[in-house]
Length: 138
Picture 1 (cartoon, rainbow, N blue to C red):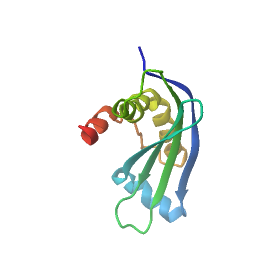
Picture 2 (cartoon, rainbow, N blue to C red):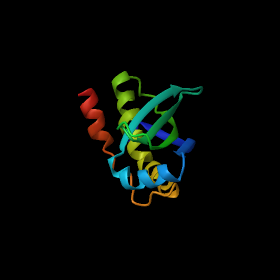
Picture 3 (cartoon, rainbow, N blue to C red):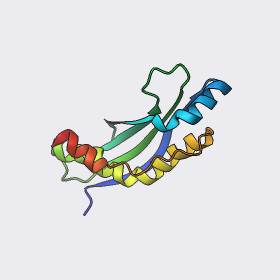
Picture 4 (cartoon, helix red, strand yellow):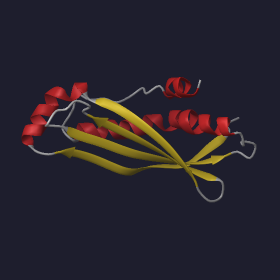
């Protein structure tokens, strides 16, 4: 039995910035070197609901003058089952289990953002949330 239920999921914020044509042409050749960062925050709301915000950023970590920037904030509204009280269990649900449930839609939305910004060769998928969670907390 699942210990949580996702009541809703949606894109809260989306951003794509490419300053000009020269930047676009530079980034088109360089985007394979961009790095994905993931940030997950949770905010308890009324009625024992939790707003889980996952921020995906795809950016140039080098010191290049010409760079594009992509960001997506994807939110899941989660209701925990009654028996779920332990902090460690809640952490795993938010950082791992919820992420695996919303992953396909979130990755597609982010890949679509980058592709619709003119960078067809980029595909963001198969983020291993289990591995990320285990490397951080175990």
